[in-house]
View 1 (cartoon, rainbow, N blue to C red):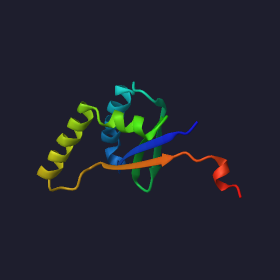
View 2 (cartoon, rainbow, N blue to C red):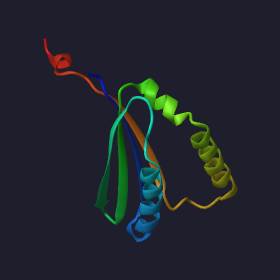
View 3 (cartoon, one colour):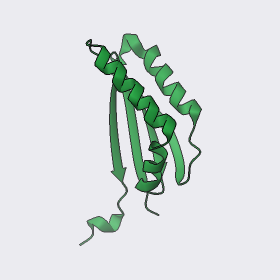
View 4 (cartoon, one colour):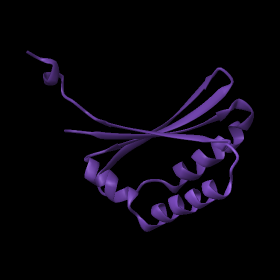
Length: 111
């Protein structure tokens, strides 16, 4: 089976860890009940005075993930965050990074 993986990481200075945890808690508690969703896990990293929480979600297909991301409440949340960014000239306390991966089979490296 082919798997599509999406990771979203929220990171900040260690002094702001509670803020990062609250963001991640809200996302994880909302859960994922959607066609094609397989599994999720949360990872924590602390390094050089910074803390990061990464939510890894596994999907049957990229299209299933895109469908979940296009939910009206998700789109509205992004619009609200973009408005806040534009109205606040200060550097945000929390940084967001998104990575996406397509699983490849071992045969990819053969020959």
